[in-house]
Length: 384
Image 1 (tube, helix red, strand yellow):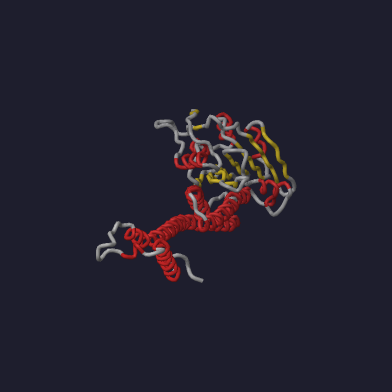
Image 2 (cartoon, rainbow, N blue to C red; image 1 turned 60 degrees about the horizontal axis):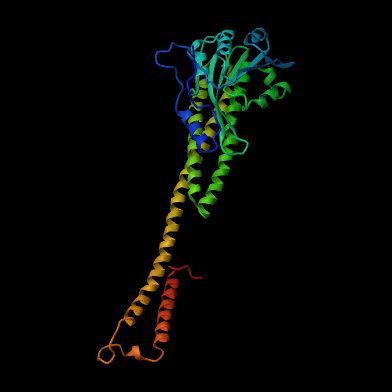
């Protein structure tokens, strides 16, 4: 059954609107309607038609082609070589259903693959393993990232990967290693290929986090030197994006850990050692994400402290100005009163020659004395 509900398409985190879209997509799982039969597939209206790419290799040779139909995978699955079938796009229920028949996938497996986003997890079946992970890639401008779900299905001599979008992935180094026969990948079985793909997905977090490290350093300088309203918006934005990264990598660690705990007949003990290294990388990513989140929280505290200090500086300046004018106002007020100097007890100096000049000299002397006193105390500005 095909449903086309409106939901947010995976998009780059760039401006506020796109960021909100991506954030909403992450929090709102796209589930079938209540009462729908198991195996119901939910396809986005704007999803592209799936493109199927096959890389079939052994120790001696490697071949890469694009397949027109899922059924063309069948002859390669019965050989002694390793077959990597990469499906890019989720826009055709018919193609996906036929793909499920070719690889003998359970209806619920196909539902998890298609109905995105899913929480990263590992599920074991009789003849294959389902591994669902989140893959992130950096934007070209270094600000933000793309996030998409990748499903890996590990069989005896094949690996099936299903990606949301064809534009961005981290698998190109794996393709180059296979075609150019670099390393030991062509001498290993499909479990090593699955490890290599998982490791590439996990390592794809590091360039993204490097970008966030640079952005946090720039924000630190901006917060200390001249914080503005835009600085506050940048801090809030980077905190939300780091939260999305945390939600992507945290369950991913548990998924990889389950591959280590639960011994699968499709994964040799030698590959378990490589998976342990992959698990360590996941923990490193988590530590970096948590560290950057703490730095972002500290930046918010520094921003508030900077605003408080700026406010205090302004209030101190205004207080000094007010304090200087208080005695001047008093002097001007006293001498501005109307007195009859012929009566005893009144102000005889009102009739003095140069009284106006003397009054100004008095007020300037009082102002200068107060400013010198404030300067010595360090209230106006620190003495040298």
